Length: 414
Image: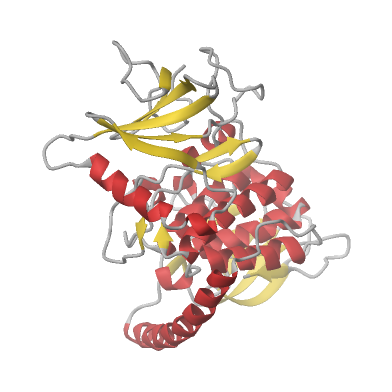
């Protein structure tokens, strides 16, 4: 079967005999990346099925894929004392004369049936699930929590994943688990342009803020069913979002996580997970999602780290204020959602139009709005105008308005 990982990677078995791995019988290739392959394998002693990733010890030219992978796995192994259930478990790491290999749990079958050695098996990933369109609210909340819990565990140990994307989110026993640690590293802001381009932040700095940015895009894809490059468009999902406060709260979380300016994002997945619990779970009356309890050592580290973060935040704020004083006002993208569709958007007495001259009609994502305060009015034929007052788009990225039965009060969501 082609592309079971949902990322354009071939899963066709290569010609010839599979590599020899101690104690494992490699059955067939189920995934392939830039430097390694993932095989479905059977334990020759127990008969159990596992996934085995193999990476050549000798790369081409100056490339050393196995060396990079070993460094990443060593970093991960040092965090064994704080394992998160939503990180894929690596059971064994070894090497042969030609390959580095490691053994992992197999992902669920996309069919929903048990994992089998037959040719019909294909691993279930979030990328495969997203082919069917947007994700229901309950699953959005649960899977977002599981993804952020895994990332928060890594960030709490001073590690960054650097390749968060739907194809690296596997489903094992029905739970979303973050996989592929080949680019895992200690936090280092000097490292840039490593990972998958579509999920990299504009600044290219691959630290915890970059993981937050990528996680935001993954959650955006779950909410909308749209590819990452369409962010922040919402298209036809506006009605479903209006009907589910959790989706609205998730989208606000995404808008903050995916700010172009790194200083506008969450500092790390720990902060993003905390906001998720407060804004998506607690505020909307949902049973609290498991996965928030931190290990005592991690709490101490987070407390001391918070002091440093506060000092940095003060310095950054001062720098930002200076920057705002010296530079022109930037443009931002803003979502406009109304309970009555096809409303025109007027800013400061002028109707907003697209480049072709057609007016923007709700629901839509208006591009190129200056990040300053504007007088906002929504107009729809047959209804009274909705005067939303003055909205500061330096702080607000999503406007939600309701006419209701008697022109109910609109609200603007930050």
